[in-house]
Length: 75
Image (tube, one colour):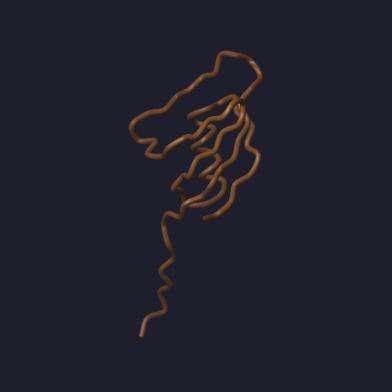
């Protein structure tokens, strides 16, 4: 019998965000950013594997530093 609890290390989160109104958008996506981003106008969404809501929103802010995070929801 073991007292060790195995928590999942990465869960997927759906992150909704808004892009700035300016026409120039800074994007810093690297090969390590292994998630798809869907953009429609000034609104975007992504399904991000992360260790928590803060980590998921941080990964989006890394790619789109000027975006505004609207909602982070565990899938």
